[in-house]
Image (cartoon, rainbow, N blue to C red):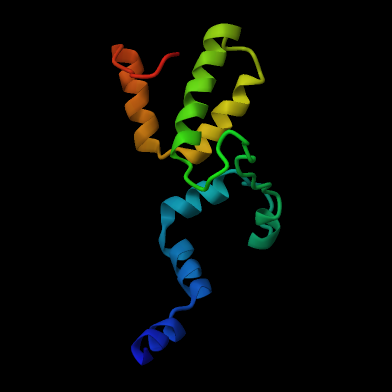
Length: 123
């Protein structure tokens, strides 16, 4: 128990996050690229311009496991585009959900399967 407590005391999530954000150039480039301006303002003012959103609650998926929610949103987006056309704005809701919930590797795999005609879902 003493070893576990010692590990918890040494672990500081804030320190680890700040070192992560300083050392990970890709993260910093993504995070800061959306808010470049000609004047050199402080980082805190740049960060306040972001509005972070998560996928809203969907009563079809009441549990915390998001795998089904991710897959169904991907299916719903492509069904909506197929039925309503690519310019139909409400379809973008499903795209936002699956892009925020699904791992990129899954989406790339599903896109490849759709192009080759081997995607298992009904779109």
